[in-house]
Length: 622
Image 1 (spheres, rainbow, N blue to C red):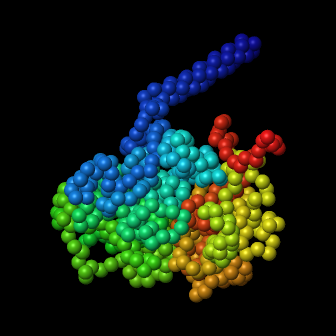
Image 2: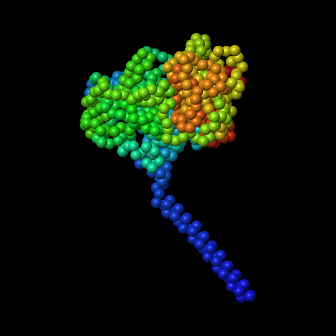
Image 3: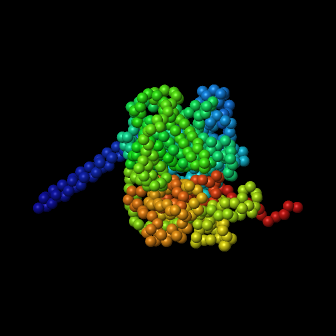
């Protein structure tokens, strides 16, 4: 009996030892496997200057260094040699030819458009922006990127950072987390109109790209940046010389004796992915894109993959993007890519050439009897031969958190204009003018960035419906920092209401988020905000789609229109809802959304630039 028990104990000890050895072997094997994978996986090179490469899902993110030198320059510069007399010289490197006439511009690295930034999803961008313009400050915005980890890199002056002063450098550092077709641009609309923009393309691995089977080629050379072009530099005030006279396609507008069109080379019997962005302009009229004798298969809008639509033309407005697939099944030759716009009683055009096998620029003419099907990013009325934004369906459904008819935070924003008087930047006072506003508040910027220097912004400068400044009592115009607070983690719905009807449409861009367009309606006359709220309470304002609405970051609100936007407020910070038709920083029709509290925001980097008002100490000069 004793021997038996001793034998059992010895067996138990041996079994326990074997189990420990087995566990240790498994752990050591896993460690060895991880070490092997890490050893053979390329480690990101901090000095890697170009991240334009094939993207793979198992690759490390790269650190991508970019340097942008911002200068005041001119078209038809010394690099253009004999342009426009010799059209070949107009295509030389660093020749900013535009349409062939002399004009002042503001550009990055002496290129129009600026250098394209092409990276893979989750790469880290480190962009040194050096401002070499005397007496002129600026910031850069990275459209389409939410900046979850670095809200202070969003590029909004006096909200997320101080403006970049003349002869100084600001380093933007953020993760390119949102894939798709995007672009970077100066925050000031006048700088953007004068040429300060460039492509920002964020690709993902082929196995993650939902439309990868629809195309054969996604080339860095097939990016189309559209911009309005006027005869003189942009300013804060309307001028006949600033009305657009042409549409630039990648910085070029062909003329009879001047630059040749932008050329896109293709091969026959292939499927090409093209990426289009409307970067800006002084007016911002919608632009229609078409290619003679070809159909466009639209596959993405504002970086969101959608169910494909095959159309003969597609329209987009300022700040918007779309991707299309082009099948090259026609005879060898050259075909015009046409960009056209018609608003404000003026028609403007732009041209590029799709060239089969290097066929040159002698493009064929479009047949007049072609059957047309049109795609629009506007909330138009659906009809035969037209695809409107309300018809477009994304590949993915709305987030589960946003499917409930009730949301945590609902904000009605009615925008219009009033004739009023206020101090303006020219130094003139008490000048009657049309002043734009949202909920009767005309937006102005704080004296210091509210994200990075909250203690330097006085509370009496802020306003919303629950906090109306005393100076605004009984006033038609109230100039203040309009800010709405949204609790972190809230389901949020913004209802935009055109109370004025003074334009065919208004365009808004939301920083830090993409939003779902869950509903819209257009009325025969303007609704007040309170009328809209009452109709909504009775379920008569609009019908909401809480299953598969489109996800975007820029929205066109039609005349007398109402649009409902939803997002899940999980990105803390101070985010602008920006009026895209401001000429400078603002015309008064902007709102800041403070998501979360200051304690929820990522810690501001040490030695981050500061700025603000200066009120000297009490002393006398004798």
